[in-house]
Structures are given as structure tokens and as C-alpha cells.
Length: 260
Image (tube, rainbow, N blue to C red; front, top):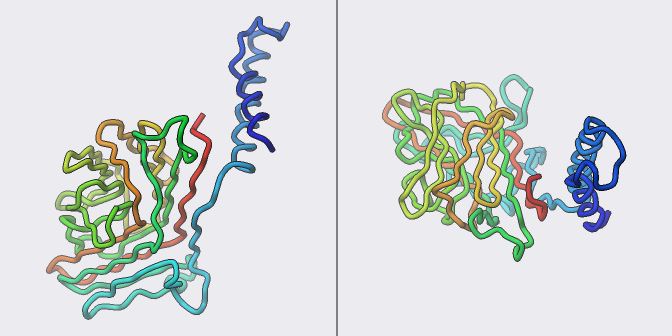
């Protein structure tokens, strides 16, 4: 499918009621709705690039050409396997008290929401991952972070990051974007991080949106960093004891089509 077809469909979708069609407004609105779906489908078929998909299916273990792991000092090291219930394939580790564990991508991706315009090929970055955390209370939320970072050793305390963090005595989920130390954050989503949840970040022109289980929970429009970053999952435990993070399917998509 060519981009010209997409452009023509969009032109028809946005045309005036009396421009071409001698039909009722309701009929034209129905056509517009149909064309909107066609544009989405064509865009998905012909213009998206799936940059990375990780399902942890490799029975030989974590692919270290894709990922770099930093294991806990004494706790269970990073490994991939089926979870205890046999329902998910996951990568997991189990840092003991006052230890850290990290898994991050070897490749970087471009997320530049204030630069995206007609001169850039990439119009959108979409990040998705599944995750649950057993014994959540044992995570130290000062440094723990799950998101896109410009450096391989970055944490929640680093500037110029996009992702999810934890906050408060109960380790509530927090969305974070940071530009040179100036942050935009949101929290209060009523999540249960002991269950397997789907997390999503959608970065495009003038927006970084966050989703939990397919529901939009935050739209950051002020502190928007332009970065080339790693997928970085960093877990730091406190003195309370061990914690077990489990990562399910993880993927990033780059697109040359902006959201409709």
C-alpha cells in the first residue's frame, strides 16, 4: 500500500459534507468512521517497523545479543522460564535485601516528542511490557525505574528519562518524564503490581502518554525529553528483604505515521 492512498483516504475523511457527497450528514459521518479504520489498518500493514519483540521463548536462555543483565550480589540471577503457574514466559531475578538487579536492552531507540515534525521519518515510539513484582514492599523507590534512559546505568534519579517509577510508603505506580531535572509526574491509578499488568508508553509530537492495561492513565505535555534511550529495568531493594520482578512480553515499535 502506498502512502498516497493513505493521504487520499484522509482527504476524503476530512472533506466538507457538501463537497462531493449528496448524502445525509449521518451517512458521511459513517463513511468517515470507516475510512478512519482503513487508514489505521493500512498504516499498520505498510508503514510500521517493529523494532523489537521479546517473548522469552528461547529455551537456551536470555539472548545476550539483545539484553545485558546485572545480577544481584547474592540473590537469584536473571533467567527466563515459565512462571510458577505455567501461565507466562518471563525473565526474572530475585535481589535480596539491599541489592540491585538490572536488565536493559543493547540497542537504543529514538523518542523525541518535541522534535517530531514533517522533517522526521519517525513520528512515534510505542513501548509495551508486561510485569509483576512479588513482595513489592521490599523495593526501594528512590532509584527503581522501568523505562527509557539515555545511559546504561541510569536510575530514577537520572535526568532526561521517560517511564514508570514507584512512590510513597506503598510503592504506588508513578509516571515520569524528566527534562534536565524538571519533572512531570502522575500517580493514583489504583493498580495492583503483584498481578501481571500491561504497561505502555506512547511518545509522539508534543505528547508522552502512559497506559496501564489498555487504559490511558497520564498524558505528559510539559516536561518532554528528546532522547535516544535504552529499555532499562532497574530494581533496588531495601532492608526489608528480597523482591522478585518478572518481565513478560516486551516490545518497542517505531512508526512513520502520527496518531490520527
